[in-house]
Length: 255
Ligand SMILES: [Zn+2]
Image 1: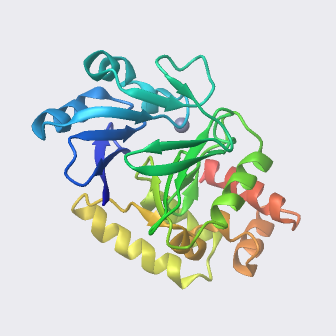
Image 2: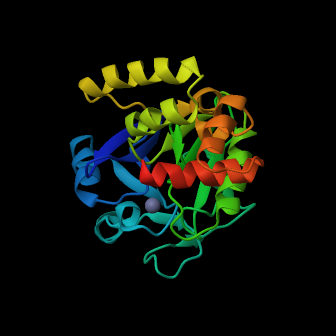
């Protein structure tokens, strides 16, 4: 059985730790900071065997040098020379075996051009989506086009509904606050915000989410619903799905 647990980093990042049964060999995803990872590895006497990298931003890669010098892990990431230390470059359609699970690599540009995500089909399926998809939100467009990010999210929306979504940031409360405006007729959003506030009072993570849950509460997954279309229309969207998505993403930047 593969367990996936969050290691909190910085103010709102999660570095996901993958461990197969009681094996001492583990994998982490996007170690932006080495210190909290080292603390867990040393406390639990674990060996870092593999690192997965989704994109080049420092809050996802900043811990690599130190972790490599201590453990020499296999480092699997996108084809971007700006990321030092990658031992296996992967892209769309590649498969990698990690912790006994086969992971499909998906190119998911938008937030950055090099962004990739890792999908492990199974029961349940697992998705490591970096800064592409968040609970009730999606990443900012730093390098890619709205169309690229929308395409990536459409692919995620087609994954099995029980797929567990391991996003890299605890942005859920801010995203749901925005979703109350962007999808105002959706009662699930308001209930999710109540649950989220309770969880955050005791600093409990609101992740992982699931694709099924995101289909209910994530406005970027709901651009075809009347509630979201009307709200985006009031912000200037002209009606088609991509325009609705683009308007939502720009509106959130100002929100
Ligand atoms: Zn990022």
